Image (cartoon, rainbow, N blue to C red; front, side):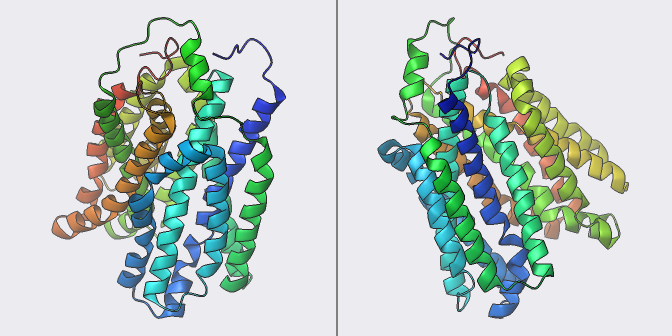
Length: 401
C-alpha cells in the first residue's frame, strides 16, 4: 500500500497526467464526429433511420469485441493497449468522409466502436493502477477529464462546421492530434505487469477485508449496476430534447437544456468525486446517487415545469457522476479475478446499456407516452440504490460501508 504521508514519486504523478491525457483524447475523438452526423447523412443520401442503424454499429462493435480488452491488456499491458487503440481510432476517423454508402459507413463506425471499447477499458485499467499507487481515489478525476474532453470535442467540431471546414480536412486533423497526444503520453505510463500494484496491496498489512461473495455473482451485480447507471446517462442525451419540445412545449432554444444540465452536473460531480468518495466511501456515495436520480425525477416528471425538469436531470447527473469510476474500482479488486478482465466486463455492460436503452424508450413512448417512457430512469435509479452494496470492499481496510 502506498504511504500517502510521503510525497509521491514524480513518475507516479506523471503517470496520472498521462492517463488523464488518454481519457481526454478518447472523449475528444468521439465527440468530434457527433455534430457531423447530419452532414454525413445528407452526403450519403441516407434516411434518419438508416443513419441511426449506422450509428448503432459503434456500440455493436464495442459489444462484439469489447471483452477482448481484458485479454489484450493482460498480454500487452493496459497502457500499451490504450495508446495503440487510440492511435487506431485516429486512423479510422479519416475513413468516415470516404465512405461511399451505408455499408461502408457502418463498417467504419463498427471498427471505431471496437477500438474505442479497447481504449476505454484499457485506460480505466491503467487508471486503477495509478489509483493504487496514490493510495486514494483518483479515478473520478479521470472521468471528469473525459467529460471535459467530450465538451471540448463537441465545441471544436461545432466551431469548425460554422467556419465551413470540410469533413475531409477536419477528421484527419483530429486523428493526427489524437495520435500525437497519446504517443506523447506513452513514455510516462506505469511500467510492469498489470498485477504489480495489486500484489503490493495484497502484501501490505490491512484490517480484515469484508466478505465480497462469489466473484462471478459480484461481477454480475456490478454489471447490472453499471448498466442501470449508463441507462440513466443515455436518456437525457438521446431523449432530452424530444421530451422538452414534445411533452413540455419548451421553446427550441431550450432543446439541449436537459442534456447540458445533466452533463455539466456530472462533470462537476466527477471532479469533486474523489474527495467525496474517500471521505464517505463508495457504497454510501453510490446509494446517495441512487436517491439523487430517483427522487427529483419522480417529483418532476408528473408536472409541466421546464425549470423543475431541468433541475431534476441536473440532480441525476450528480447522482451518476461517481458510479462508473466506482464500478471500475470495485471490478478491478474482486478477489480471484484479474483486474483487467473485471474492468473489461463492467465496461462491456455499460455499452450494453447505451445500445439497448434508446430503442427501449422509443418503443415505450410509441406504446404509452414519452414522459412515461423517460420515467424508466426512476426504475434505473432504484436499481442503483439497491445494488450499490456491490461497491464495497474494493480496497481492503480502507472502504467505508
